[in-house]
Structure formats: C-alpha cells, structure tokens
Image 1 (cartoon, rainbow, N blue to C red):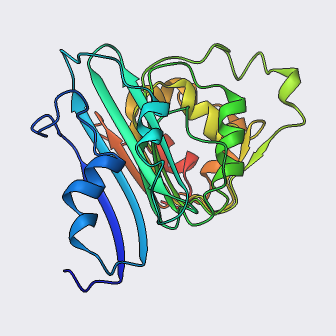
Image 2 (cartoon, one colour):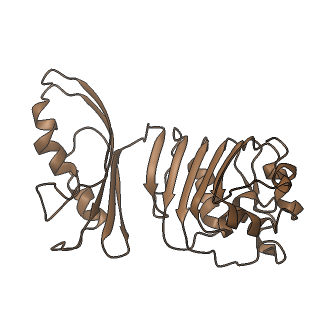
Length: 259
C-alpha cells in the first residue's frame, strides 16, 4: 500500500486488550503513525473514525482526552477530535476521528460528545449510565440534524419521574422536533425514555415507523395503552419489535394503528 494516496478508515475495536502498549491500550495518533501511516509515504488524504473499547483493570496511569489529543500534535492530515469514556471502574471506550466528521454511523458515544455538528450521521448509538434529561436530547437533535436511526442504552431513570400527570412547565416551549427519525431502539433503556421520546409535550416524530422496546416499560409508559399523549408519535409506527411479550393484546393495535 506504499503508493496509496487516499485512505478512508472506519474501525471499531471492540476488545483492544491485546494491544501491545499496556500503558495506553487505545489506538491513538502515535499508534496510527508507527503501525499504519509510516508505510504509506504517498498518502495525501486520510479520513478516519476509530473507536477502541477495552476492559481495563490495571491501567498504570489514568488516560485523559487531552493525553490522546496530544498524540496528534504533529498529525499532518488535518484536524482531529477525541473523547474517552470510563464506564464504572473498568470499561472504557476511546473515540478518535478526523474533522469534519464524514461518516454516517457513530457507535456507543456518551453524553460527553464534543460540541460540534455531525451533519452526515444518520445512525447513532448512545450508551451511558447517568441520567439523561430533556436538555441532552435537545443537544442530540441539534448536533445530529439528519439522524434517522437512534439506539439508547441507559438503565438509569430520569430525575423528573412523572412525565404524564406532572408535566414540567419549563419544557412547554422546548418540544424537540426529530424531523428525520425513522427508528428508535430502547430495548436497554429505562422506561422513562419511552415517555421522553413519545410524549407529544416533549417530542415530535413525524417520520417514526419503527420502535424497539420491552413490553413492561411500554405498558407502564402508556398506562396500559390508555394515555392519549403518546398516541400521536405512535400513529405511523408500522414495525413494532417488543421483547418479553408472548401474546400481543388488541390494545396494541389500537395504539399503533399503522401495524
């Protein structure tokens, strides 16, 4: 590949514990240069997204986002960004990518994503263990303006506990418009997030056609399919994937009339 002039790389390393540098088990600028780029002397354009996910039990020194960013100090292929997420005490994910971001998928980011606009991303997976409130999802709608498929993994309940009978008056003027959303994946999310996305006083989803979630949280959020405030955003759903449901009651078809 020594004659290569342009390289586009999208790489996810889901268990990088076997990487040789135990002091820094993430694929950073130094690793890119020493293991890949040094063998491409004619490379002129390099566009990339790389995430390294690790189980780390005995890291000699904590690694920060700034530590990773410094390894790109002499990077000659344009601007870069990075973020490191520590989940509990041992699971970490490091994302590094070139700017502007040009890929359509972004996997397993947390609430710490950079304050930039991802104008090409259509598929997003958010993974976090802290409570994610309405303001965070407003940031999502602004940072990912053409997002079509969204998956959330977060079992932590929101701080505002009763979205139906006690609506937050502070949010009355901040209904989030998800103009392009086609699919939501909430299989691994607390039931509060069903209301966050489907309650018409919080969100508008004119294009939502696919919903993935567990049956228990669904009946809790809809109060056994009796709450009208969620019906509007469910009206166009024609593909409903429900876990832990052996028999679909008739109420489901009435609540989701496009099934």
